[in-house]
Image (cartoon, rainbow, N blue to C red; front, top):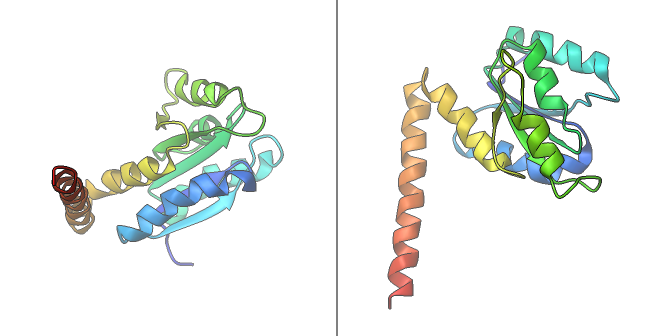
Length: 163
């Protein structure tokens, strides 16, 4: 099996439109990733299997997205020794996303989850790449180029606005 540096998991396929943004930016930065559905509530055995073994499969960072009660990121972090980035998702049963944000953000001491903005999977992908870049200079160079490109895009938009 080919090693995937980042594993992206979500509680439901309804989260896919948001979570695929993490995969897209990772692939743009040349980082292998995998994506799956792992429900903290409906598939707890799969959650445990995934979380306890991801590091043995070459995964370096886990991105976990969830809406509503949003237990997935915290449960993954409770089991896995890997860094976990939580993506709160505004779902159909959500209280404007606040339930998801607070469920992921308010983790107890000893079980950290880095948390990005509501529906912020793209930033989760970038953060995962930055974590990997601390050990991989090629990835770091791609991130530097990515950020330089963002800067140039803003400068072009600014110049166009001032014409």
